[in-house]
Length: 64
Image (cartoon, rainbow, N blue to C red; front, side, top):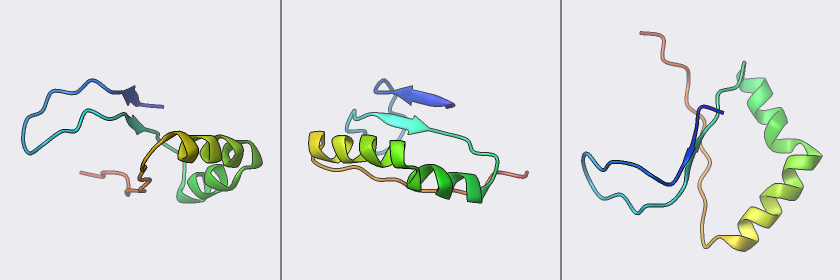
């Protein structure tokens, strides 16, 4: 896990103050496996019940 915080300095646009979690995986396959893991699916269900909304996205690694 690279970041897990609800504290951020708004530099541009509007920040709603919600949690941001940034996780690095060794591969795209590993990220998909994590999202489908039985233990995470249980946590994900609880997270969905406790939150009005959540977004999950995958981005390619910066290679610049």
